[in-house]
Image (tube, rainbow, N blue to C red; front, side, top):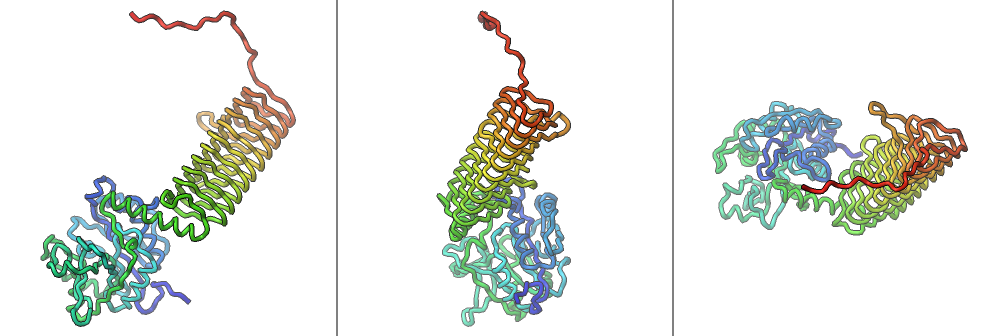
Length: 476
């Protein structure tokens, strides 16, 4: 049986420290760096989510710049873990950051140190790193770069190849700068050892900061084994320091999502023009055209086709449905469901609470909000259905609306099966249109109608012969 790190007796419980105190000057933004979004989620949310998935007992987020805003973003907590915050004010380096978290860490577990601006660190990688630490070693996550400029170099013993130190780029000699193996900023270490090393850190370096990487030379001096777990996946250790880096990582991440979907059989017109900002489940033979954005939780049934330039959030679309181009589906918490074989769009808008049955047609410039449409109902042009219950095979005319709001409260419109609503009608809620009834075009209906009735509410046409329109006065 697989064990989570929290259950593994080799290293005891796992606690995570996430460094999220930096200002992110190069982002040139008032928003704290860790709250910028990748794939529709804050960078910090990605990291915290991964911490939860490895079974962390506790998570300490070290905040500083924009601390109140960063801490508020974590109001939902982390499932299965105790969430606490430590303030780093002023910010005096990575070692100083973890020093602030140290009093909140118990001595009986392994500490995993993460960065809030490295959003795609994988849980499998962290599990391997914790296993490498094995309750008694300092384990570093490293990677080799062709151009390691700016990164801390991993210095190994010439004879044994054991890790001896991590030297920051600004403090490295020319020989050390030639080393291609760099420290990713992620480590796993027994808490009892880490606390002792943190207390011995100094700031005698080019930047006058307390480097967390100095714990490596302290460990080596104490005879504690330092091991490197080498990854080859640069995407997993990529940090964000500028809008350009954020955009590049977004594209790389999106391409990875697109590739995974195509491996499942999803047909994407162009993987480079696809955006997933949540979760997307696809059955067989789904087709997605270019420039589509999926947010929240979206499910696409077998044979669903999504046209170009659609935005779909929190929706379930059943088998055989076609979403024509430029359709906007925004489910939010209430969700949206589209029945099998339905046709939606182009230029349609389905808002929260729209629940469509099988073979429903929603055409161009039609908006549906908090309404149910039964099988075969159609609203093909320029219409609004809000807070409505629409029966089977209803034909809802162009330009017609449900007047659902009286200025203070919302009211519901009920339209029975087989009703025909003519063009340019206003149905003033609360109201029920009886099954099989017909509403004549141009009518304003403010009283319920009987089943099978033709209801017309128009004023008698009045014509004034030889009418002359007002004329503009000549300019002075």
